[in-house]
Amino acid sequence: MKVRNWLSLCAVAASLACAGNANAGVVIDLFTDPITPGGQVVSDGTVGGGGAFSELDGLTNVIGGSRDLFVETTAQQFGFGSTVLSAGGGFLSYSQATGVTGVGVVQWDGDDNSAALDTTGLGGADLTDCNGTACQRISASVLRADFGFGYEVLVADMDGRISTLTASTQFPVNTPTHADYYFDWFNLSDGTYFLGGLLFSIERTGNLVGDVDFTNIGALQFTINVPFIDTNGDPAPIQADIDLTLSAVTTVPEPGALSLVGAALLGVAAARRRRKTT
Ligand SMILES: [Ca+2]
Ligand SMILES: [Ca+2]
Ligand SMILES: [Ca+2]
Image (cartoon, rainbow, N blue to C red; front, side):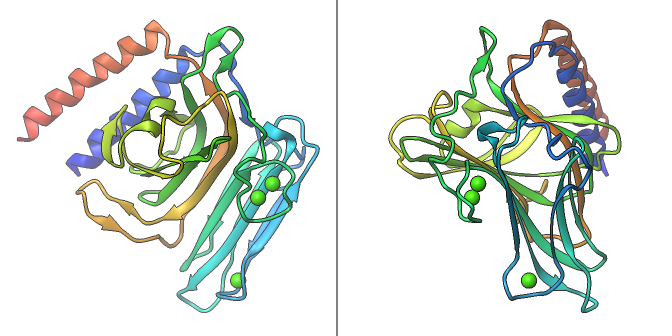
């Protein structure tokens, strides 16, 4: 209970952090293509036999103009039910039916027409260009998320450097909030960290020499429902019955002064709470 209360404060901090961001950054995906909610959808209702894949090309508010969706159902407690991932109308939605466990993957890797990741498919996108201000993080607008399931954010640059951040939804999100992933985090040594209110781990693969070049990105991938480290530091498996809705993924500059004040105030509140409960 302690941990959950404290993490709900982090959720408030995250939403305040987004309040100061007037500068538009680089659009990764606004999920406004296609116009219809759920206009691009993949669904897998069988365990085994592979998953379901869809790629749409020629999209406007999507980095590289292409979006890949993939889902696979990995277990069904009651012998039926599907894993569904859809995009369109301004939303990305992922859901597993009751008792169903699965995995969902969104790839921004250009027109490769494959569920495999083409790590050079974007051809060198610059994620740092925020109209003259340097963008420093990826920001996802989260409309809704369940407790405790793991996800991965993978970035690959054109020189073969790959970094994967693994985190989990540690609190239910019932009102729109933002999740931020600083570019710097992807260049930390392999390990587990607690920064910016987020518990996450980093794993570097591919070319290990030098930092991931966010001015020269080859592919981005978001994987929903992976094993993760929970708030007690214990390994947790993939989860059943989960739901997630995002409304936009962009890059943004540093938080404004207002949001820093908000974060500092919340830091004090969190410290007070910690003292009270010890
Ligand atoms: Ca299947
Ligand atoms: Ca693709
Ligand atoms: Ca692909």
